[in-house]
Amino acid sequence: MTVQQVRGTTPSTAAGPATAGPAPGPSLLDPISLRGVTARNRVWLSPMCMYACGDRDGRVGDFHLVHYGAVALGGAGLLVTEATAVSPRGRVTPYDAGLWSDDQVAPWRRVTDFVHGAGARIVSQLAHAGRKGGKYANLPGDAVGGGTIPLAEGGWPLLGASGAAFGRFSAPRRATDADLRQVVADFADAARRAEAAGFDGVELHAAHGYLLHELLSPLTNDRDDAWGGDRAGRERLLLETVDAVRAALPDDKVLLVRLSAADGADGGATHEDTADLARRLADRGVDLVDCSSGGLLAGVEYVPSPGYQVPGAAAVRAAGVPAGAVGLISDPHHAEAVVSAGHADVVLLGRELLRDPHWARRAAVVLDRPGAVAPPPRYHRAWRDAQSRPFGT
Ligand SMILES: Cc1cc2nc3c(=O)[nH]c(=O)nc-3n(C[C@H](O)[C@H](O)[C@H](O)COP(=O)(O)O)c2cc1C
Image (cartoon, rainbow, N blue to C red):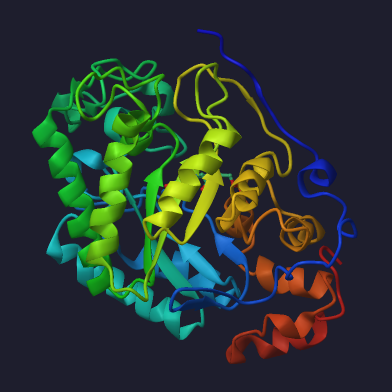
């Protein structure tokens, strides 16, 4: 199989000039409403595993309260949590957060209450890592490239669409019909717990080669049963999960799906395929598609540059489906251009919000709308004087 390079695009080609086109679209700093959920602006936290459940029980703790709390105080509109496992074997690492058990609800409730008190919205990213699970955490000193944790060291058997391994990971067991039905039920149960924990909705992680993505792609799904064979078969796990999760959530709560909008390999998903799938998802009650890329196959090379995934979001949005853009977006003018040029409805920031949880407020200063992201009352003295100052001065 030929593996293509996924090349980035420059901010100007990704977003188009801010002044191009007819009427400018909304601003990054404008609110957005999806169903009954209104986010105060379009600066959203991208999901990021924190590997911080030290007791390996999937229960979030003080770190998560402070981590998500800081981003909420910092002015972001909506936070998508780290990948939160729907079953213990669906974890990426032993230290992942979970919503597979009722005792994980109250610790999350502490987080959602604080985030709401700070004026932000929060959505739970529900995930099953499939054949990419059971690995070491990506922390300094961990055996990141070491593949799967051996069973004797606390790893677990993996589940996959086929029996093929991902790179140096252990080979998974090929999922049975009963396994996949159980996965759908696990997502629905976790969504019910997310609702009990006070989340504003759920994002399904169907990107980066995790189980829902692995089933979607002909490059990784070689099944000839009802969970593969043709496009409808390969989409079945995702679409049944969407239906089950939508039914588990109240009508006013949001359902997002993260897709890898392009796989970067011959025969894998293209932006056109993703736009088609996004329409089917929207027809089933998905409110926004969060457009990432890659992660399906080991050995696909990426050359990311600012805004490199924006074209995927633009394709989804052109199909009439609300879209989020993510990936090396850290300049406020770039983020504003992505939204106002109509390439995405929201921008998700990952690492930049780890570097600066107050990025949304700083962006408002840079974009000359300091009042658009009001500081928390207890921080007002810090921002009174900073409002005329750009970044870094
Ligand atoms: C530490 C870290 C953890 C991540 N964990 C997740 C995750 O749990 N779920 C997910 O969909 N993407 C995850 N990602 C990808 C990010 O959400 C984001 O798409 C990527 O970092 C590109 O955005 P950025 O350039 O703004 O960081 C992770 C990225 C980082 C850096």
